[in-house]
Amino acid sequence: MKPLKLDEIAAAMEARPLGAPGRYLVESVGIDSRQVASGQLFFAIRGDRFDGHDFVADAIDRGAMAAVVSRPDLVPPELHELGLLLLVDDTTAALGRLAAFHRRQARARVIAVTGSNGKTTTKEMIHQVLSGRRRGRGAPKSFNNAIGVPLTLLSVAPDDEYVVVEIGSNAPGEVGQLGELASPDIGVITGVAETHLEQLGSLEGVATEKASLIDHVREGGSAVLSAESELLVRLTRRRRRRAVRQVRFGRCDGVDLRATQLASGPGRVSFCLDGGQRVTIPMPGEHNVLNALAAIGVAREMGIGLTEAADRLAEFRPPPMRMEVHRWGQVTLINDAYNANPASMAAALAVLRNWPDAGRRVFVAGDMWELGTATLTKHQQLGRQIAEAGIEVLVAVGDLADAVTQAAREASAAIQVEAASGIEDAADRLGQVIQPGDAILLKGSRAVGLEALVDTIRALAEKC
Image (cartoon, rainbow, N blue to C red; front, side, top):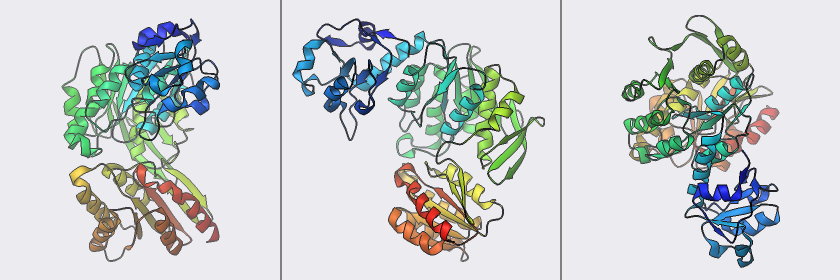
């Protein structure tokens, strides 16, 4: 981040110093006392399982210059009069205020990515393309909430030319709040699907939430938007402003960036852009074509040509647990276990269904969370889709496993089904299922933790 004086930071956060703050220069911020760097400003964030106030003294001992707190009574009294504490109403909100202040001063162009699926992959593709010519950074991991977005913005160096932030949401208004904080020069919406229905209510609620990002794109900026959802197209058209250019991408006619002539192979997918330049991505799944189109759209807005963008995408490596392909002996594992909803499950199913040279196809399906009243229906639908796709083996994992397997069994007598209550049960069942030549795909919501099965599958595969 740009070095800022402590009193300047206090003013930006609307903080009240406890004691007389020194005129120190702060060059970074942090929220983990175990990773504090010398001269860093520590934020005592209160979470569900921890309270940063318990670690303020540790952070100061490790070299933190000062700490931002909302509960000074939880901090050792000897720190109160040393000018090392900045008192705020809410430390997470204060972190956001400081990030907004820093963003207004940064020269870097801000690219914000939201959508129901593909946010992290699209963010990484954008960073992959832009980093070939420009200095910048992307949000680490999935830093896409009220803590992650500010930390990403505050990581921007004075000479950075761009930063790619990821914006998530599981409740109404979150995209708008984070979009206002980021104030992007380019906003990207990867698409909409039935996610977080528990809070967002319906597909239209999801689309309305994602579309709100456009309201916070800076005038003169661009919105790069999926044209695959008629609902999203309709909602974003309502937001047309002459000062914000809308660029649409998809596989349909009438878009600015159109993918044609899609072709898939083991561990890759390719397409032609508007019937011309062929673009190859070294990861499977036709749904990743849309992520690549979004990255190309951003590249164009940043002055980077298609040939250069295609060359950079050809070297792309997917983020962990997003269509990662492993081959051990005669077994192939496709690890897409990071998260799941009905649309991403369908996309993963298409990858497995079309996987070449597979003796059998094994779908390990974890529960899909946050679907509200549609939970049972969507899991039954998933079971039918898996069976109708001709998948030979289904291992369902979680509380809804019985619903998934029963629906699959009713849809096809040919499919072998196993219902596992949890990871250990699933590991035992996989030990009885896996055979040489199998292609296995892992997909489930984050809380299920299907990635814990990777080592088990590797060990079983190496014995085949």
